[in-house]
Length: 93
Image 1 (cartoon, rainbow, N blue to C red):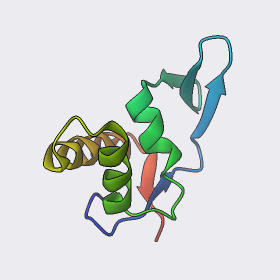
Image 2 (image 1 turned 60 degrees about the vertical axis):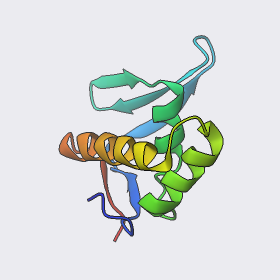
Image 3 (image 1 turned 180 degrees about the vertical axis):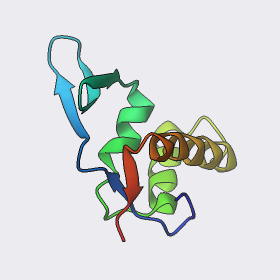
């Protein structure tokens, strides 16, 4: 699921929603929801099936620039793997 050329997208049962009251994104899925931090919401906003994991890592490394790219890549892959294990993200292919 998290190879460099994987194109992750949200599972059909999941949807990303911005909550105006809290100013945070939430990932909603049947009878559950997750409040996302800024980094998690940045990653999931790019999970459209158009961006590869490598492109997502590049985007975050450029945006947050404080961590070495290797660290960002490991964190993105771990996050996507955890979302995939929960059935919330899958490969678009």
